[in-house]
Image (cartoon, rainbow, N blue to C red):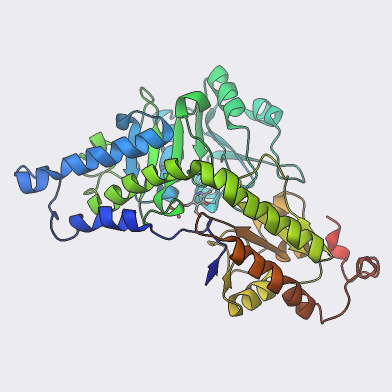
Length: 395
Ligand code: PLP
């Protein structure tokens, strides 16, 4: 299997699994228990908290462990509204992950106001739009750092500066960034930041929310006093320990992701654009995650491409894994002004440190034939577009 879908999820690293195993059977107590068999686990939690805090250059007490990136996003927005009941507006973008969009849609049904800012045709967000759209009743601005479908980066530091100046809380969904971008929460100037372990060789079902010191926080999940009263529920000790180990690995992988993996991504992208007529990139080339490329293939449906790639032992995706399987065109590509047909002809390849040059060569060898087969083995020329067969190619 050749895996080109690291933005969907990643393999749990051996070191991570090893770090988790002791907490399933040997040290399986409850950290809240008064006896040492349980209580001694607080040390494992402290170590993991210190590791994830170090990854984002935060203080350990600013970390709230959650069940996933989705919960972190929901919790940040929920807290901003709950702690400022007189403010009923949230400012976000049209290209956020569904973990933000769906929660905002729910808020709209409950009478809150949400602005989904548009992006340009290359997926970029104009900072001026944020400035213009902040209202006196804006409780929070929530803007992702790296787009999971295109890899396009938003200018988070500039947006944070505007929010701070205007006295509005700022949250960023940074789920796609660990191990690819250096994360320094103080330099970024964010109030809240979401991460999820399974994107960085950790287990699925564990995430975190960074809550800047002195920022008011209203828990989203209420129960016991875990996480200093900020998230009820018995701590998932093995997964938290795994997240801690994964955070240390992500820090160590930063250089490789930005050199070897970036070169492989560039080779793949260039190779596809050179070899396959009617292929073009969705989204700006820079600033972009070093591992992601999203490409449209004129005249074919991504569904077919992915199926034939699967038969060739290659995993790729048509965007967000959460929306794959539905017939809807990607909301990200649609927001960038792509026609529904172009959006449906687009596939995402996201690489990781496990990928080799031989795997990229294999993909480059197989893909042109797959596209040709889906186009009916005809010679595909620009004429096709002119004749209307590829008319969707125009945005
Ligand atoms: N935000 C982004 C940008 C993502 O890519 C994802 C995962 O696909 C999430 C949030 C949700 O994370 P999780 O799967 O941990 O809920």
